[in-house]
Length: 504
Figure 1 (spheres, rainbow, N blue to C red):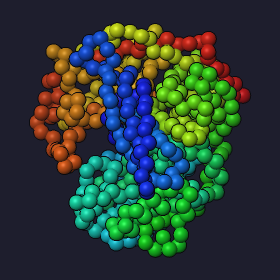
Figure 2 (figure 1 turned 90 degrees about the horizontal axis):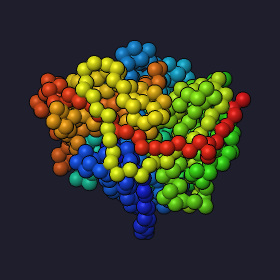
Figure 3 (figure 1 turned 30 degrees about the vertical axis):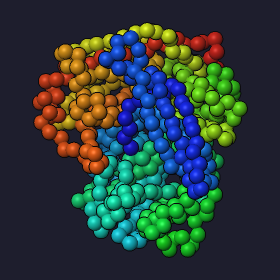
Figure 4 (figure 1 turned 45 degrees about the horizontal axis):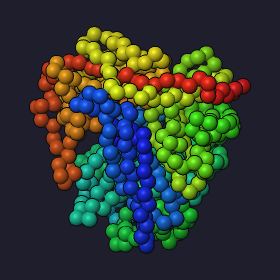
């Protein structure tokens, strides 16, 4: 799943109710992670308008998502060879490594259960789970080519005048997951076979859920039902609805029984329940598991103000040796009616980590935002973005329609670095320009490093992709992209309000 860059610092939520559905409008402003180069003295302020259709009976009233680059993971040729014969999703260069492939191979469950309705077949290929994440690999095939508007949405060609969207639902022991119950879920996939086949993966964050070792997983889509009665979608995406045997006759439906007990030997869950006064929240638990490490932080129901959600991730995480542990840039969620849990995945720690220190930071009130600027070509290039940390660029690769920047963080750097790709005159040099490309941040688990991928992607007014032209050829991109700058972090750490957690 690809998302445009941006992050909220202020948030307004407004609920609009009608008979069957309700929606909410989100106004995200005062962006702090990117800077408008045309306004020399202020942070870039972009207002992102999102409208989500939700259904009555859904578990949440509002979910907020920060629109920064989604963290996905680069699949290397070695990794593809390692796991391609085990999980078919990885048998393609378009696959992304959403988790360490060695761990996926070790804890994979091969399912291969299919169901066919109408023109479509849904196959549950593989499931891999631990106490932090469950990975669901699936395949959808169609008798006719699927109309592509973007990489993660299906459209039925016979119903294109209604822009019918192909939704997949997933339940664990009957409980709906991934529809706003928690944050940090990842969805990706690619088309093959002349666009008649879609290979997909859903990585669900289950760290805040109580999932037994043995559970039933259900994957389904009511596409054939919805062609004739869109109102019936209410049932299938309501948390308290139970799918009946009669439903299964009319929808694409597959299920499997899963045992995740074999991951327990390499999983440690520490229940903490310690107050984090800087964000009026509580560190509920820490989970070290094969598929990642996470903090689970609970917002108090008494405080659903804009500041509470904006401050919840304004912290630095250190271990007992003083090493800054990279906290990945994920989305955030806010439930307006009950306690909200957000999970934060972090790197550079393992089962041997003895202590965590959570230090809040504050943004300084500054009138100008400076950037560290360097010519590209010789590596590494070090950017000191604050007294607390540096960004070290180790390589840059340029190909047709794509620019890839390899880097790691030395010390603490807020979120994803504020890169600017420039020509000799200081003009933007991203492939396709600011609005003609997407940015993915790929996380390389084996080296605790990252790759920022700027890739040309533009659409016409009908939502169809515009083919790349010579303007974004590798040759022309190399001519224009000569300088890389990184915006400085204007922050101050608040050690007086730090919280220390012993894990032994």
